[in-house]
Image 1: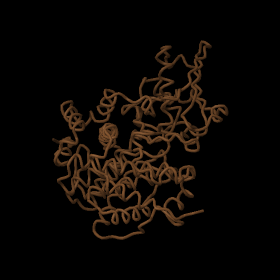
Image 2: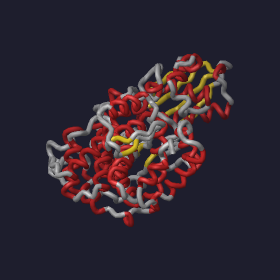
Image 3: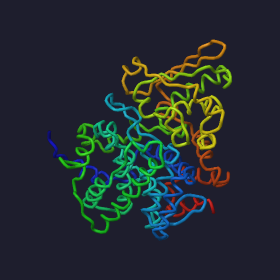
Image 4: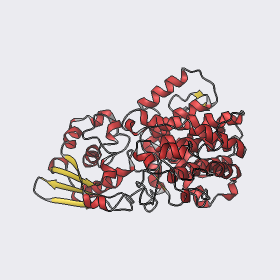
Length: 468
């Protein structure tokens, strides 16, 4: 095997040379949507137990007023720690967007959650250094987003299959490149930042369904900002840390597919093609088509919870393995529990902030309904491969009727069936209504839509403080 490649240098050159005027209009349009979505999720996750603990411990390290943590009690922390807190909050609900893959040997929708690491890093560094324009911020965000996605697409599937959580590992590179771009690092310095980031990537799937999973993304943002700040201060690391026998690709994934990354940065931008999924539900994207199928059945037939004898979800291993909890005992497990997700749809006809709480999960009706829902492996669905998310919902009613619906392949939120701007704003409202009033939300909607017009991102970040 030829381990000598130049991916690290290509990534650094792409980031160093990217200019706002080079960015396609479609990339900018989707970036604004991803940023609005990500900000809402930081608000939604700011009061989650994992975020509260991470923030409390971060404050214990000493308050350096460089960058704002987005929560009710907005606190300024050192930039890497603010990125840690906001990054953890952004993934705490498991509602952040998902990079897509169209390659048959990849698992569809299971590459990385691309927005939060570069967004958390970009906000922190912009506030720390000041005088960062909206155009510079968007350029840096898309630079980090693109590097993160291309690395996730290229690394061999064993990286994820053997237990790495890509959003924690590969997300570190996205955060480092966004931070490095804002700091004005040279190609040489960006290579060292990537080398440092390669030794700081972490996150294992054993922690899915626990407080640690969101911290994977928070740590990606923290480590990326740290790597960029170190490089700006003269720190040196392996300048080809992605490459070679001991580089990130080989060590953590057993290699990578050259044709997916060499000469591919920005050609096209992954945010455009194959695209990104903005989630309608705060749980793994693999569950969403099944939830929508259940919602369609419930509405079409006006299904009441007490009319159901049994619900069976048929799917392949790509869904059944990671969505592994039989009965959820808390909201973290609920995100990876198909019986809960279908039960929430059956009982509430929705699954949002109000449903993903320990109180709702452990309520008597929900616990009872979960025991009427089961999953079953379907070899025919499995044989179709993992190139799309496929499942089938069968509802057996007490009167003997059986209602069946396939999930479909162009699922809601994906590039082929995106959330409307109205739906995206409704999701932001659901995420932020505990912290922001309607006027503040409208100001943020307008600010994100015109983000490139800001001369200093501090003015934008000021709008995000609930106390303002």
